[in-house]
Length: 202
Image 1 (cartoon, helix red, strand yellow):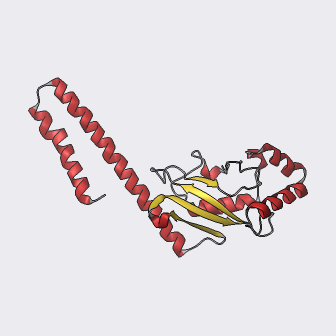
Image 2: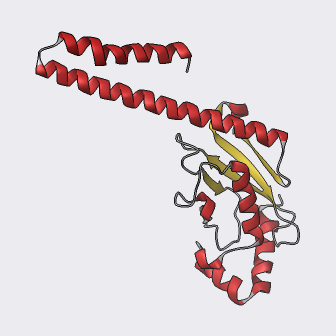
Image 3: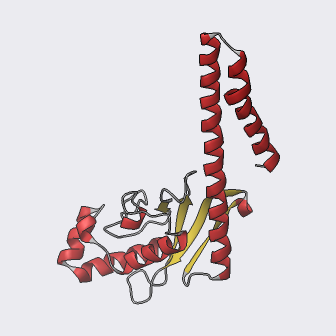
C-alpha cells in the first residue's frame, strides 16, 4: 500500500465529510453519502490494521534470522510470498520421549496480528495429551484470553517446546493419553517414543 493510495483515500473522505454534504439538501442523498463514507472508513481502517500486521510479522522474521531459536525453525511459505502463512519445525527436546524427532508445524497469522494469537498446529502426529489428532494445541499462550500483543512467534515456539517436556494433563485434548500420563509415566514415555520414531524420524 503506497502513501499516494492513502492520500487518495483521505481526499475522498474529505469530500464526503466537508464538500458534498454542504451541497446536498436531499435527505436520501445525504443518507447514501453517509453509508458510502462509513464503508470507506472501515476499508481504510482494515487496510491500516493489515499494514500493521504485515510490518510486525516482517519485524519478527528479521529478529528470528538474527537470533535463531535453538531446535526450532520458522519462515514464511513460498519464499516469503505469503507472509501470513509460515511453516515451522521443532526438534524433540533432549531427555524427552520426543528426542531425535523433528516435528513440522503450520502457522497462520490473522490479519489483526499481534492483537490476536496466531493459529499454530502440528502437521506431524504427536503423542501428547495437549495435542489432538488434528494437530491442534492446547496452550495458554495460543488462547485469545491469555494472548498479549507483546508476545511473539519466538515465544510461542519456545512455549510449545516446553510443553513437549512438561505436558499439562489438566488441560488435555486427548483424555486417554492424559490418563496414561497421570497413571503410568513409563508407558506414556514408551508410547511417545514409538510415535516419534514412526512419524518424526523419517
